Image (cartoon, rainbow, N blue to C red; front, side, top):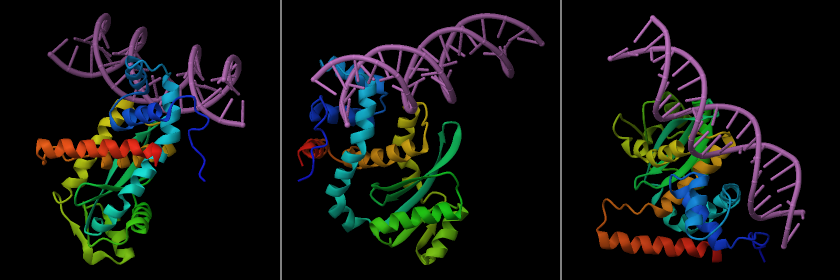
Length: 234
DNA sequence: TCGCTGCGCCAGCTCACTAA
DNA sequence: TTAGTGAGCTGGCGCAGCGA
């Protein structure tokens, strides 16, 4: 029988879940979330929100990943789009590697200090360990990708093109918005943890509003919210 | 023991002010 | 008009102390 992770917390799991969702999903600061909860008659300090996000964010993200696992197994072997983006971390430049599938689902996020062959190789192996080998890999012209793909033995599956990888480039935008709201990340471990959590939340709540009819979008939004609320129960 | 709070620190950003 | 500077603000982070 697994222990209830909320057993010591004085605040109800529903409120904790709401606060975590607000902070991770939307570009809000800890103090913004504190104010919004206060508006609903919930009095907590911003530090409690930080504690909850740190403790329960990865837990919720893990549950989302487990629930989407069967869906991901069906589709993720089609095509991967890989891209890396630099992120300032306490003044130092780090690189956030991300793998996106052909439907815009964020498969993996990985933070490294360098942008070389070994970093690309680690990222590849980590992603393939979780999802298996893709049919095709789309990358930009960054050389470490070619070297890593060659070492893995998938060179015939790599597609390189200036505009082919727009899907991956565009997928950075939500994280960039979030980063701007946070002003910066301070620690590499926090960046890695937040990037993974943010990706899971984004996958769950990304309902492709722009390509669905309003009615379809509303149904999918209700379903996502219902599933989200069941995470605490399940 | 552990959640929660309050406080202070640090780094980055914005904007008003000043000098050239 | 433009570039440089510094004060003030914002938000993340660390930590000590309180209370259940």
